[in-house]
Image 1 (tube, rainbow, N blue to C red):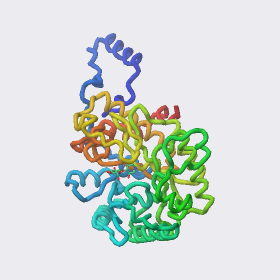
Image 2: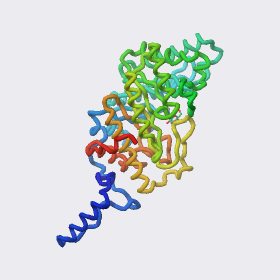
Image 3: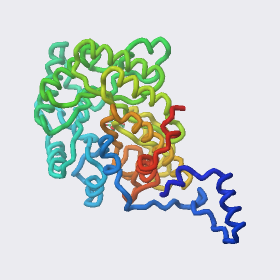
Length: 390
Ligand code: 9MR
C-alpha cells in the first residue's frame, strides 16, 4: 500500500492537479488510489516491520511454536518478528497440571527454537485467576498456598533463567468496569490467589520471580488498564507494589481493541502515567478487530462463525483497520523512550483467538494486509497528526 492510501490527498488539491493537467493539455489520469470498495493491493516485499522498528522497540508475535506451525508460518515468524510470547504452553494450567507434574516439552521446544533462530522470548504468565489448577489452593492455608506459588515460580523461572527476557508475573488482577469509588482503590478481582493470600500475593509473586532470575524484566499485565476507573486502579496498585519493594520493571497494556473504538488519548496518557512511576511499558497482546468487540476477558471473543468465519473483510474495513494501526504505532513511536516491545497476539488472521474478526497484520494466507504496510509507512513517513492525542 502506498502512503496516499492512509493519507488521502485532500479533495481540493486533487481537483487542482486535475485542473492544471487539463490546462496544459495533458490527459488527466484516473486517480491511482482505488475506490474503497475495490481490493487494496499490498506490496509483499517492502521493508519488514521488524527491520523498520529495530531502533524503536521489539516487535513480537504470540504462539506456541514450533508445535503445529507450517514451514511457511515459521518462516513468517523468523522474517518479521524478534520476540515471541508463548500464547498458552507456559500458563499454569498446561505447564503444571498437578503439584508433581510438569509439562515442559512444548515450552522447552519453544525456547530452543527461538534460541536457534535468534528470537527473544517473553514468558506468559506466572500468576493468573484463569487457567490455574485447583490443586494450588486445595486444603491449603495461606502459608501452604504461598509455598506452592513459590515452588511454581522458582521452578519455571529458574528453568529458563537467562533464556527468557522477561515475564508477565501477574496477569489481570484488576476487576473490569469500576466507578468513581473503585477508581480510588486497587479494585482487585476476587481470585483464588486473593482469597488465599490477600493483596500481598502480587508483591510475593514479583519477589519469587526476581529471586529465580534477577536479570528478567518483570511485568504486571492487564487489559483495559489504559482507560477509565481501571486505569486509576492500576495506578493505585502499581504505586503500592513499588512502595512495598516489589521488583517490578514494567506494565503490559494488552491492547485487545476494535477498529473505531480505540481510546487513543487515554492510551497516550496512560503510557506517560506509567513512565512517571519509573516503569517501562510494553504493548503485550495487540490485536484490532474488524468485526465485533472483546476487551480480552477470559473466554470471550472466540467469534469464529458468528463473525463470518474466514469470509474476507471488505476493503473499506481493511483500510479503517490500517488507519487505526498507523495511529497506534505513531503513538508508540512518540513514547519510544519507555516502550520496549509491541507484541501481536497471534500470527495471522488464521492463528488468532479472535478468528473471524480479522484482527492481525497477516491475512489467513500469510499475506501482508494493508495494516502491515500502514504500520511500516507510519514510521517511514511520519505524520505528527496521527500521534496527537484526541
Ligand atoms: O489466546 C489465548 C487462547 O488461545 C486461550 O484459549 C485463552 C485461555 O487460556 O487465552 C488466550 O490468551 C489470553 C491471554 O493469555 C491473557 N489475556 C487475554 C488473552 C485472550 O483471551
